[in-house]
Image 1 (cartoon, rainbow, N blue to C red):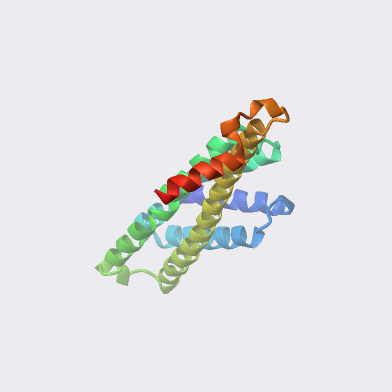
Image 2: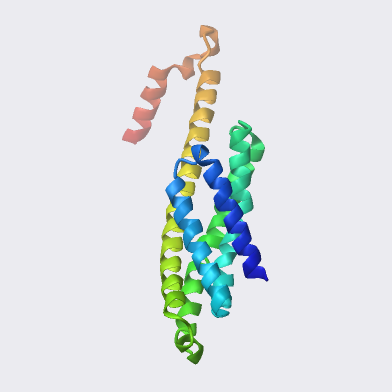
Length: 198
């Protein structure tokens, strides 16, 4: 029942992505992700095998509400809001926890399962899709995570730059009396030069 629900969710999400394809710049990534997942869910359900492995892979979808929330906030033009910034960090850590940290668990459990007698009863199509989906989804997740990480880094740099500009604007007043004698850049350089010599 759970796999059928997941199949329905991925199918409806794939339809929604197709309808909103103009909003998604990396639409092919989403199609690969959903196509591979749909085939895997269908084969696992049809063969009644490897559902445990499939469930571990499904853990990655725990980060999806944060990704969707981020998209909604972007559409509402709230990119500079505190809520968007908070959600950006939640998305980053949810991605790290549910999509990246689960990769070794997925492959170690798969390796263990493939050594059991149950593995021999699986159809070749199920075995192939488990490997193909695992590799494809891991590559996509690592690629998406690196984009998220780069976005978080850029935002931190941007905030730091904005803060420096704000402080710089505050420090540099047009009033010449605000700068004391010892605040003069030439004297400051002189003192820093003499300190270096000692």
